Length: 270
Image (tube, rainbow, N blue to C red; front, side, top):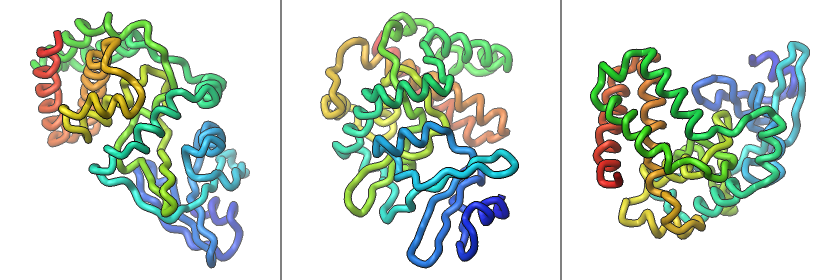
């Protein structure tokens, strides 16, 4: 990997791993020039850059082995802290993403198909039964039942580009105060409630949810809470499966606790 990057950059650049699960991202520095490099980023990155949602794309190079290296601006700034997620700029950026026809057109051209809640439900149901988790964990059985009960209220929504991994570490604030959302590897076309439900659950006190939704630009209607909880339940089940496959028992316990809490909250809705 390093050899290919050195070949793409030329002489005199110092490379530092940027972390992350894949190990395929690096910072590069040469005198006063600085870049963020990644291997095989989605072509979606170009339109995200053009829309000002990610740091500017500087160049793209295809290597002899077929890999594509992208270089973006490495900005002076910081990741958001959990308390920063209440900032109006977070709601504004999400609204911009969810209402962008350019992003939607590009994802469709890349072959990403819209995900309806019925598709998602059948997929997670099949996986949970295949792993015998419905019989093994009461929390899973109840959660799957809640997904089925709430499913009709999630239908016939406008499906938009969703980031699908909204945590504070993926939001960068430049020194000039411009907000960027990075790490688009899980981008989907889905109900926007699947995105802002994550922000509300993890960062916004429940008594402030209505205010945040107004900041974003929706009123608390059209089954908004039911839809948010539906996607939160699915998200928790999805990561329960993921942690089980990775043999991470502490994380599994954490996810089961999340499910129990979500199930209790859904009981107040239905």
